[in-house]
Image (tube, rainbow, N blue to C red):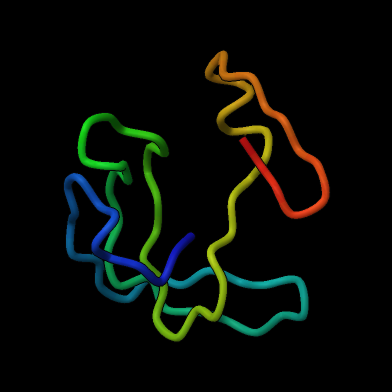
Length: 77
């Protein structure tokens, strides 16, 4: 989930769909699609959420697709 729609490679408008956070608050899904860096798709089926304050990434999604993850302090590669 992200609040940065500039990162989307392709994007589809959504209506009347929501996500529920751990505290039971809801966020409205405005769009969905693949997110990337311009040369490749990094995250498939990313969600653009209204009023999201931080980008949220499931650690298992890139790992399940065969990517290596390196996490240390404030760095994630």
